[in-house]
Image (cartoon, rainbow, N blue to C red):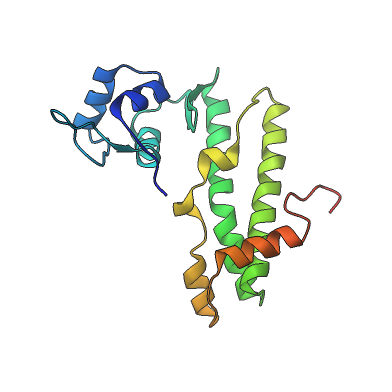
Length: 182
């Protein structure tokens, strides 16, 4: 489900002024509904987030769900982006590999979720050890658009994708958030 916000909420989310949001729109920031007399602007926050990440953030900043996070060096911001890129793509890669190796869709789904969460925990711990705390790599860099295409994967092995059944299986395993001991 899309989260639609108005112009003022976009400005507040990013800590910018309303004229800045207007400038973003002139530069191509996506919107759902253009505002007019009696009608508010509507923005898909995820689409704005993606646009800001591509066109507006600076070398020392990373776009997070809570707005822009600044770093004291470009290298720290780049390391966060690099780890985020790995986390963003690892789930779909792992899912495809698991299905190719013969895993059922629920098992592949569970492996995808568990591995993604664990890899993010490892990366976040690495970052914290280097003075970069408070980054949630999964929240910041993953979205529905970057997840595995479960319906297509299921079809490729003659199955169907039932997200509720996969979620149930995942939680039944008791290992949703694996630890280094697992």
